[in-house]
Image 1 (cartoon, rainbow, N blue to C red):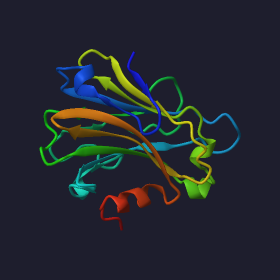
Image 2: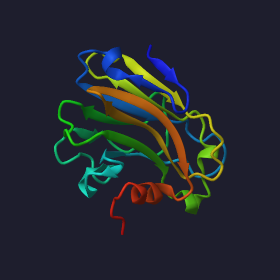
Image 3: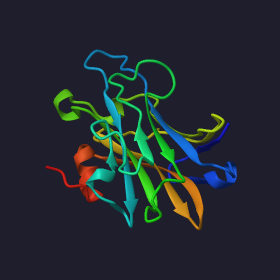
Length: 191
């Protein structure tokens, strides 16, 4: 069992798993238990340097499933949150991540949030976790517990390099401006 983090907490993945080469970043939530449209949460990844995405092609999401070099791969879109465990996941090949990348940010947004009147305040049991692909061991986990009554997108966490080590930080920062707001903040060209 890995480290359970509080908001803002971080852990060295390199120390937890010294020969770490690939991780699976899993994101999950519970299916809607009340009436109304199901929650369609979408996980994505922004491969960044200096707080900006390396380029539009480095924004990995359900319509662009891999980074140009194949270091970041989205495994597919879950539309409802049904079932146990991870609802969406991304595979990160740490050895392939470009040297100029200093962090990979993991936003999650609610598809059609405004049209459906949905916010993260209505979503239950949302989490992000990092798993060692080699042995399936969970290295870190962050359970979102904030009241996000106006947020339609959130940055759940980030993988980052620090002095040659890969670390994971629990972020939990909400955006009322949806995925578009996050993308714009990180320099993605949004039409």
